[in-house]
Image (cartoon, rainbow, N blue to C red; front, side):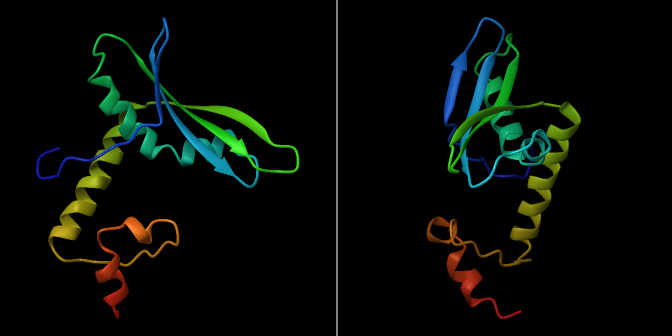
Length: 130
């Protein structure tokens, strides 16, 4: 999308089947996911699927989460995520809007114990006083 920097994606697993190029993202969870939860979490996979599409333009791309549930009886479950073109376009527009806000200096901290250590905005986030 014009005016948006390149995004770096680290795809967990790409596999080729007779039917499609499959983008797989591995997740761990404390409780079981539902199909709705997987669908709601799918924006990252939508972008991965669009990136992967460039690798095999004449083959369909499929996306899925493989979730390891860390419960007393662990389970591994697979959840497909549909690559709906309207949703992909919406995700692109969200990324573009966020980037324009960043460039304009509109900064809203979003601290996360998981992401703060590697976030390039960690210092501005901590310095933000409202």
